[in-house]
Image 1 (cartoon, helix red, strand yellow):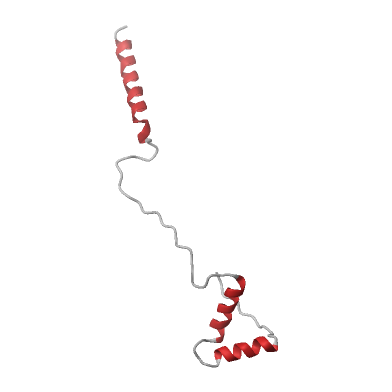
Image 2: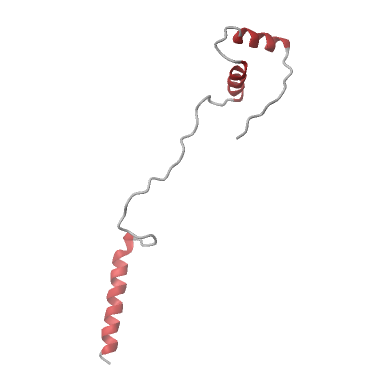
Length: 90
C-alpha cells in the first residue's frame, strides 16, 4: 500500500472548520484529514483484521495418511499377507 500525495481545493466552510480543529495544535492537518475521510468512507480507524498465521505442531502422522482409515490399511495388509501364503502353498 502506498501513500498518495495530492492537492485539494476545499470549500470555504470546510477550510474554516479544518483551521478551527487544527488551531489548537493537538492534531496535524494530515492526521485530521485522514481521520475525517475514514469516518466519511465508513472505515474503522486503526482497526485492522488480525493476521492469519499457521501454528504448526508436532505429529506422529505423515502427510497423506488418513488416521481414520487405519483399519482399512490393516485389512489391506492382512489380505496381502493371506494371498502371499496362499500362493506359497501352490
